[in-house]
Length: 168
Image (cartoon, rainbow, N blue to C red; front, side):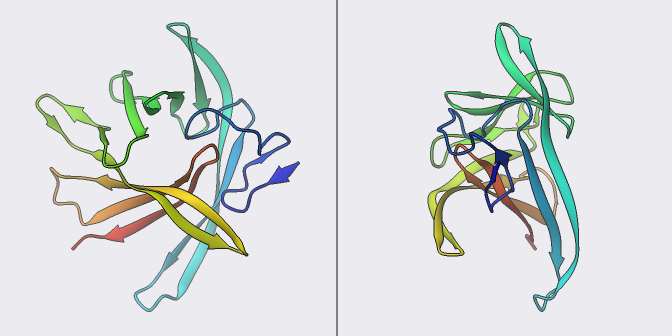
């Protein structure tokens, strides 16, 4: 087995090209270390979280993957899609094109959450290896919500980092 530093995706065929932003195959998993920092930069605590693809299913002749976080996802040519927990309808999540965004929580005549691709080609060096990442911003335009999220995604590997930040 090989594991990649970024999210400990472990698989014997990890480095083969996988179509889509997030590789999807039953048994794939990502192990994340969740940490928090105070205003001085001092790290507090740390918990481990594992996201795993537990099974697949056919929906309208298309393979979808069920994750242990409760979401069902698939890769399509325009990005990663998920089934909404509100109404069961497919929603576009991670998009492929720079400055495109997806409405992840639509309401009639309004969109409550957007996931926008703000940087394609962000370089991150870890232990002498440079990774090229897509950076997504999760936006809450219709709420007085003081927190935002940035997702750092390595195409064909998945989410390697998520940062929460204060917007006020």
